[in-house]
Structures are given as structure tokens and as C-alpha cells.
Image 1 (cartoon, rainbow, N blue to C red):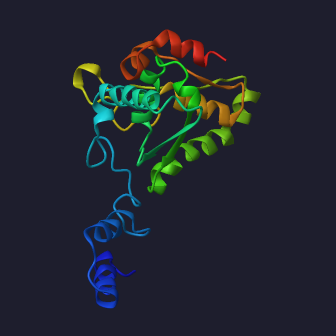
Image 2 (spheres, one colour):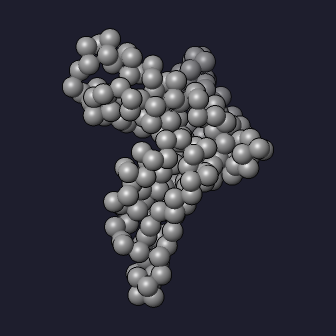
Amino acid sequence: MTSLKENIIHQIETQGPLTVAEYMDFCLTDPAQGYYTTRDPLGMEGDFITAPEISQMFGELLGLWMADRWQQMGAPASVIVAELGPGRGTLMADALRASKVVPGFRDALEVHFIEVSPILRASQANMVEGLKKVVSLAEKKRVNICIEPLNTRVDFKMKGHPGYQCDTVEWAVDVCDRIGSSGVKMLFDIYHVQIMQGDVITLIKQSKD
């Protein structure tokens, strides 16, 4: 396989100098050798962490800012919020939770995730497909499969689990809904949910069905 370096050199030789943006696009999103397209870079097993993985405060402040901007726009009935590179969706989960205090804002939202990493895009789909393969046996044996959201905050005192895929109630509920079996349930651990999302009572009410 031609190396990424060789591809870049060929591009320069045939089409002239690259802009910084074009060079970074090669390095980060090349389908075969790009940084983001060939690995999961987040958490303890990756190369870096981001603010939402450390504290929910960043996402909550962003959510309140979005709600404020929406009000200043005249509170339109429909507004699109698109997140580039959402990773595991932690930032958006924090933002949406905080913004619920503004009446009408969440009802107006149409959220879109734009993720270039096929690994991150496929992570939830892989889990759903894997559970679908065993759920019929679990139903036959009358065994429940439990999906437990855990704290992934990178803080020793919180005893987090950095890199754990299911770290929000919404993520677990979505998996349960997509599998569509009464034998797949969410295990609601108040300790972990409180750290990640706060407002445990509201989350229980929203997720009880």
C-alpha cells in the first residue's frame, strides 16, 4: 500500500502546493491511513482526552449558551445544531441536559452529528448488532441483559472508567430501543449517573418506559 507520505508528495508534484487545511485533511481523514479514520483516539487507551470527558461543566455551559442564542434569534420553532467530531456524544449530552431549563428550546432542536471516524460511528452499531445475536437466547432462558451507564470522567476521586462506551442514560436508552427486546434493560446506577449527568430524578422519569 502506498504510504500517506507518498500520497502527499504525489499530490504536491501533480497539483502544486497544499494549503495547511488540505495537508491536515490528508493526515487526519485519509480513508486508509488517516489518524481519525484508523483508531479510537479518546481516553486512556487513546492519545488524548477532551474537556467533556473531564467535567460536565463545559458541555452544560455550551448548552446554556446555545439556548440563550436561540432566544436572541426570536425562539424559532425549528433550529439545527450540528456537532463536528462528536466522538462518544458526551458534550452534546451535557449541553442538552443543561438547556432543558429553557422552555421550548429542546423541542425546537434538530441535532446532527458529523463524525469522520468510521470506528466511532460504528461503535454503537457494533454493540447493537452483537446484542441482537444473543438476545433471543436470553429471552428463551428468561435472562435480562443489562446495559449500565458508567462514569467516564477522568478524575481519580470519582473512580471513573475512561474510554467506556456507554456513559450516558440517553446512549443506553437508544441501544435498548434499537434492539427492541423486553430482555434488554438499562441498569440505572445512581452514583455513576449523578457524576455524568446530574438531575437523577428527571432522568429516571424520562427513561422509566
